[in-house]
Image (cartoon, rainbow, N blue to C red; front, side, top):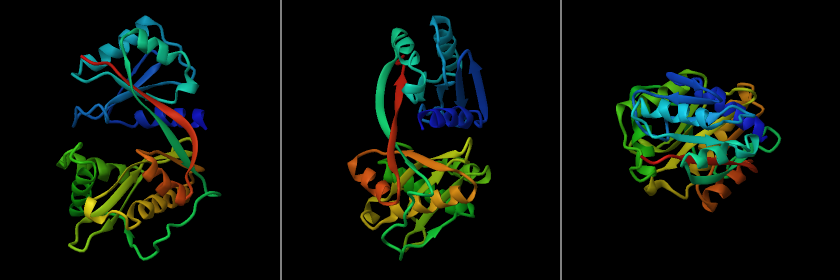
Length: 250
């Protein structure tokens, strides 16, 4: 599965508004933000970079005022991490990822929750605000954030949310458009006041089902802790591999 996830990462970054391909790396850039979590690179499977390749990669980021950063499945490119470390890159994190297939997919326990698909600007704005709160303000809400969510849905991916009693958003998540048989589910978040009600499980299960309906053979995601892992496992996600995050400080 590692090679499928890495191939997907390359294809998904090539969907960004601006794409830079340098040596054996693909850099995906969204000009509306300088966030390193949106603007990053990944190596092509089998990459064996030398010093010049890494220097060209760094230059592609520096020329745009961006922090050099990569996300990748290290087992598919064993020569990449050592080459990056020689250039000064440090490990940010190693994340295990989980995979769901039609054979493992199960429904959430709380069938009373209504999972919706956003359709209006107000919906996308409320989802962006809710996710910002869910992540403790790490990603402040903005018109650009809401627009990115809409683009995800309009370009073959999906966004799902559970509406709160006041008409806003209690929790939500999004999933990229499928590519090479798989899709990445990300940004699962529930506002603090609405947690422990099954919202994360409900939107995750709904998104997986939506991707399978689009022809995906699998859906994968990364989790942030054992609590969230248990949520995803309840709806059919299973451990399958790891992804490495590396970055270069100024």
